[in-house]
Length: 317
Image 1 (cartoon, one colour):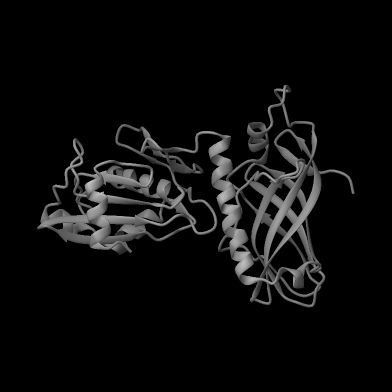
Image 2 (image 1 turned 60 degrees about the vertical axis):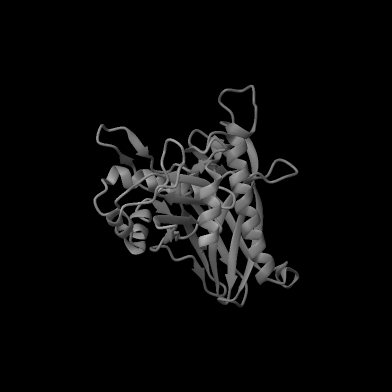
């Protein structure tokens, strides 16, 4: 949460950045959907930006002078209504803190946006302005740039940075929760059976004496000494049951937003314009698995797959 001292320091900067955005005025109660979506776009982008960000309402656009909000504008911001609107467009849902400050007799509203917790925030709904121009695109991942602009992840380098931060966050969680050596040979297996854009099937088997639940599934590149992410870490939907009883087996279905074929094309500078079509490439399936509702472990499975058209198929034994 921000303090009055924090806000004062942000106001005297008079310079926007990837982590700070000023807005002159807004009445959340009477604002159009288009105006609200524009704010949501910035909030989602800041959540995907390292260290998150802050938005301050009550700063003049032309010279970043702290002018404050009118009383009606100040009172119009409500944390619950803002959260409900934000989470119509974000997956996974997340919280940003709405705060109100009166500083030197002037009123300001702030949105304190935390960096994503474990997986990047993806826009899950299209939104257009009154003229039909697209403001938000379903499936897009937005970030803030050093030019203090909000835009879709522009290139492979920025995508790698984003996804590597997600890998580190997940790894930090595992280190906090699990004595890894105790689960090094935990008898749980998983293999990819088929994949098309946005739709993947894998078979899992739990040969242990423990109940397990899969919390995330991610595909990494497996043909280099380092494992570059090819998809984000996907969590089960509310309608999915990713639990396995002792000795049980099950097919899992998941739908990553990022396409491994497109990610490989951006990561590998192949002279073949059709790459990776027709190529057999090793991938790594990375699962986070919770055992008996307590211990969280990470399991990795290397598997050769054939990229054929828009399909990914298992190859070999």
